[in-house]
Amino acid sequence: MVSGYIGWFTERGDGQTTWMSLTGDYAAGSSGAPILNDHGAVVGVASLSHTFYSDTPGHDTQMVQKLCVPSAALLDLIEPE
Image (cartoon, rainbow, N blue to C red; front, side, top):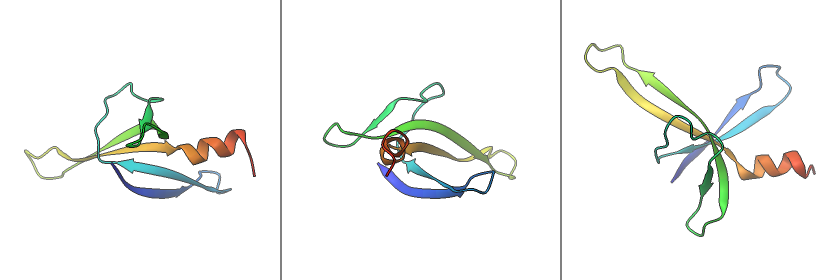
């Protein structure tokens, strides 16, 4: 399930990248795998996950954020407006 869209500015400062955040899990090595909607259409591509750690001893992992590239962003690369 898509939990939201996140916009980050590029390191060069020349634009913004939009990422799609998921609630579903995927493992290391899943980058490039399609993310499908209820109808089997590709809505994104698995890209990265980031683990946030707690400062509290004994509670190492706080949460894991799973990010994907939305398919609309990929289409913009091959079919510019």
